Length: 399
Image 1: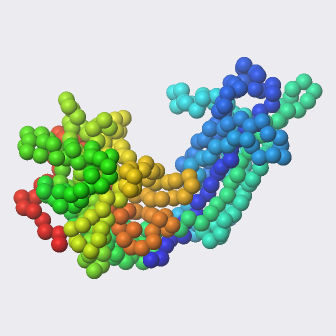
Image 2: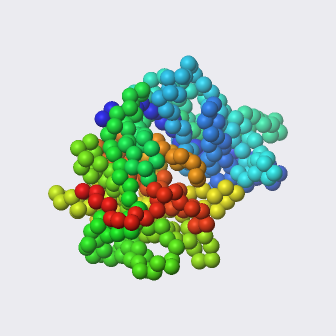
Image 3: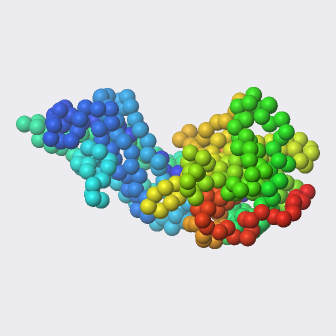
């Protein structure tokens, strides 16, 4: 498989030195606490990043004794091609709280730093743009000029990714294409089912006992109330991923039904639905091994959104993980999800270091399908689902 050239712009080792007078001044809004200040990082055409700034007591020639990191910026192939030269990255440092009042930031500006960023060649080699202390300007303290100083490291590194695109909505059993530049190549096919009986065929019979009962809670709620037809629930959903030889290589299956919280018509965070992401295990086609578990619910807000939590399955149980990014291993995965009721054909990006073979990529395809389908599973129960998501009258044969 060929990857696409991405680059990651990293801003880390952030720390602040303040003049003694500013530390003690009650009117400046700066107080001698661990993190009294913050910064906003702006790069043209990208969302503004915000990070807390811990105070450092180290000298000018020494690295800070504390530090923080910003989320950074992920630069896609189109942006790399369109960059005609250096561009400024601006770091604005503020004292006070990061909150806003009536849309206006409550922080007091201490100073700004501009760093020239040229990402030419960043997709193939690491580049360091800034490393060390910089002055934020001077203020008069009697006869002496005192300075606030910011420590930061700004660098880029190659971040190649595999890119996949669903040819249709996951519930419509689409083909999945790999994207490399202008080339679209089919690599997987999907088969969606809303069969109530499909779940039990894909969870190992001894799954709970093999994991020392740590995962017993995964299936208890799925099995309880199985015969209670009066309970509103969305369950039995499953999507299979096949390779080009029509061999199953991954699956996602609802293991905990999506049900409304008592007295409401929404799936809440306190009672989420859950998926198992599965991979084939052994030579038998019906033998599967859990790879990950995805919980999903409907977040409350001015505009309701999808909340989720992903955990990897290990021999010792569940391991919490950042689904999209890891501060140590960089980019892991990204998947587009359209708004509720809109046509959604997920675009999936997977960090190259996490894919050793096509079967690894298929797991991320199954996971992205589960995320997209969770948008429908978490719709208000007063809403009607499209026909593809309703339960089948007969059991589908996948093999």
